[in-house]
Length: 393
Image (tube, rainbow, N blue to C red; front, side, top):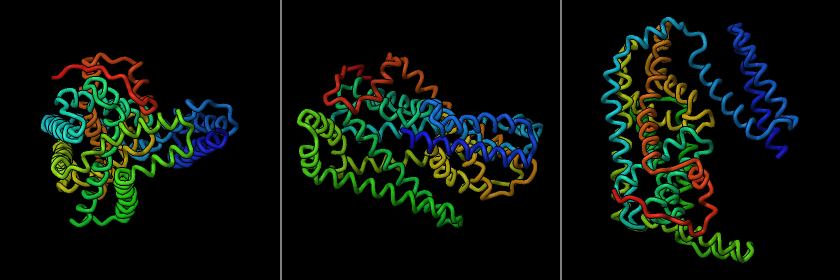
């Protein structure tokens, strides 16, 4: 615990050091406030006088503010306001429509992943999906994934660990798709060494995860042997029960037809998002035409940004990912810089807003409470979860 506190404390102190550097550049008094806040949080963490909860809050908030500073430091706020005022917000209508189309395709993909466990209706699957997305936006540590599994298991009466396994498969498909998109952008001529390095690291991770799942499915007896050998009998039975539920969610990988349909809907799921980005970009005047490849490159850039620990919704890293994407295609001169900053805010809202609104509505329709959120976090500790059949919309 002390070592973890030391690590978090050192990172917070590094963030405070970054604000010292920015103060020397811009001499803004706001940096002095940030230096005092994060310097104090870092020192309290290092000497183990700050709870883990407050350390995490300080760390995530510091990361978000650091990234936001990279986008907004030094901009002219009057120009920023003008860019917001002159934006063509009607372009957000088709952008939002394609966000909804993305959610539709994503729900169909989830239904095919769930088929080995039974025929799960569209609307319970959709509601669980948007509740999970909303949970990932407002809860730490990707807790929305567990909440999604809990909600769907409860409403459809199927294995919650099994549902969670399909979410794991989804994430691997998502990661591999994003890497393919990144590869395609590089082939189309966007040469960037950092993108290539990210692509290599991501490929190793997601291909390794897929191989691990296949090995787990084909050599399940290895896991049984290890669990029975090293765990007490009662704990071994608990672990084996969870594995039984989990492996039921991987059955789609053994069925060529079902796997083919998952891949089919996976393609359409990720085609819709760059189109949504494209319409949102058209809402702003950057002084020069933006090529359509910018919206495609924004997909892996934003996916990477959302994997960085920060405040809910990826505030900060998402803004930087949008700025870096646009900087690949246009020169960030005065005036354009402010437009890019404005676009980074509006594009972020246009993507997360519809999903979060639908998630909150679905949360109320499902009749969930804060206790259900906690149950979602703890669902992996339950061998045979109590599932209550819900609506069959």
